[in-house]
Image (tube, rainbow over the protein chains, first blue to last red):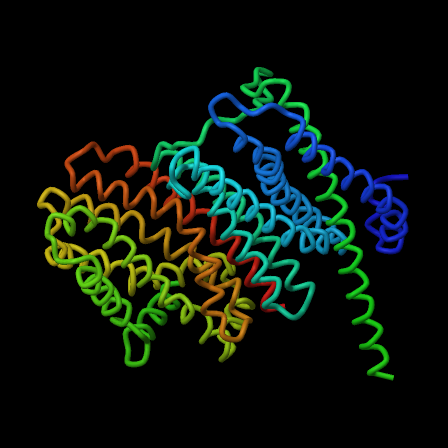
Length: 243
Length: 218
C-alpha cells in the first residue's frame, strides 16, 4: 500500500468519489463558519473599523493562490519524473483554481486598500509580485489550451511551471529591491511564532484558511476527476471512429 | 557550430530575414513616446532609461517567433536534433545569432535614441553597459519561449504572454541600473545582480529550451 497506487486513474477516481462528499461538506461548512464568525461575531478594529473584516477572504485566498502554484510545481515534477498521468491532469486542474484565488486576493486587496491606504493600487512589492503570479498563471493555462496532443501539452507546461517558478521567485526579490511598499509584513509568521493579529480575529481567520484549503483540495480532486473522464471519453470516441 | 552561427546570421541579415526590422521598431516605439507623454524635456529625461529598456525588450520580442519557426517548418530543426551537435549547443548558438542580429544593434542604437529622449550625459555609459549585459538574457529566455511555442500555429501572441513575465527580473534590474546611472547614483548593485541573472540564464536556460524542443520534435 503506497501513495503511488493512486496514480492509477481507476483507483484515484474510486478514492476521490469516496472522499469528495465528506470533503465538500467539511470545506463549505468551515468556509461558512469562518466567514460568518469573522463578519458578524468579531469586534470592529479600533483604527480600521469594519473594513478589517475583508481579511477573512483576502488572506486565505492569497495563501491558496501561492500554494496552488506550489502544488502545480510538485505535480509537474511528479509527471516529469514518474510519468503518472493523474499528476499532470491534477496540475492542469489546479491552475484555473489558482488563478481565481489570485484574482480574489488582488480584488479584495484593492477594495481593502482603498479606504486604508487611500488607493486601489500601488506598485508595492507584494501587490506587484501577485500581479506577476497572475500573469504566470495566464501563460500556463494558455499553453495548456494551445496544444492539442495532451502528452506534449503536459510535458511543455511542466517545464514551463519549473522555469516559471524560478523566475517567479527571482521576480519576488527583484520587485522587493525595486520598490519599498505599503503592505504590512506577514500577519502569521510561522518561524517566530509571534503574530500581529489578536486572538479574536485570529481564530476565525484560521478557520477560514482551513476552509479555503479544503475547498481548494475538493475543487482540484473534482476537476481532476473531470479531466480523467474527458480523456477517457476521447479515447473511447477515437476507438469507435477507427472500428 | 561555427557553420550554424554563420548560417543563422546570414539568413537573418539577407533580404526577408527581418534584420533591421527590430531596430526600426525600436526607433518607432521610442519616437512615439514623446507624442504620448508630451515633449517636456525634463520628464523625458527622467523616463528615458525605462523607455529605452522597454523598447529594446519589445524589439527583442518581435523577432523571437522567427527564431525557430522557419527552421521548424522546413525540417532544419529535425536535422539539427539528429546531428552530433547536442540540441543544447544548437539552441545556444541560435540564441547567440539572435543576440548578434537583434540585441547588439539595439545596444549601439540606444545612445542615439538617448539623444532624442534627452538622456542626461552621465547616463549613456551605464545605459549601454546595462543593455550590453542584459540583452543576452533576453535572447536566451526568448529562445526558451520560441522552443515552447514552435509547434503551435500562430503562436506569436502566446509567445509574448509566456516570455514577458520571464523578462521581469532582467527588466527590473537593467532599467534600475540605467536609471541610477542617469541620476548619478551608485549602479553597482543592480548591475551586478543583472549580470548574475544574465550569466545564469545563459548557462542554464539552453537545457530547458532543449528539453521542450525535444518534446516538440517528438
